[in-house]
Length: 211
Ligand SMILES: [Zn+2]
Image (cartoon, rainbow, N blue to C red):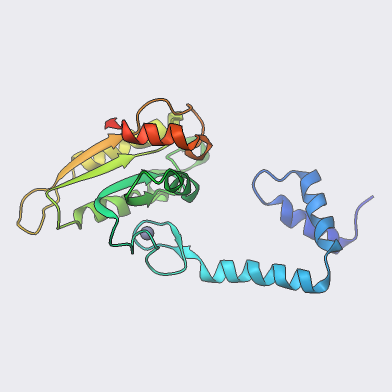
């Protein structure tokens, strides 16, 4: 016994979302059908607006409705510090600590050969280009704040090696010293950064160590 085709299609669309199984997809579809036509119109409009107005920041790949996100655009942020994270969710987790005042770089994931994700699928080359275009500094810090899974560790090592070979020069022609650090231990192994509570994250950030 199957539902009518339009309802089957709706359930199928919800199932395409992460962590949504068949039961949840059904519940969401039925909840949507219970809404008034006005409520459904508002819902579709919000979805369309979000999709058409939100894109990636051209510098750090945070989600943004402008070419540069509000963090990259904020002159009070410390532009000699770039914190490298997997996802925008991790960026939000670090922002919630109110401890970090530098900029970010969102990779879009970690290198994972088993899932078919290579370095070229991530925003790694953009990070290298970004580091080479920081002419105002004699020293910069790249903080690797990637989850402590096997893939996360491999990704941090890969980026660290790339950064070791980067030659960047400042306005005066001096080589810019690139310090690569990582969060201190104490974060749960294998979990995403945004699972850590704010105190743990703050401590890991304060006590960061050379990578
Ligand atoms: Zn940005």
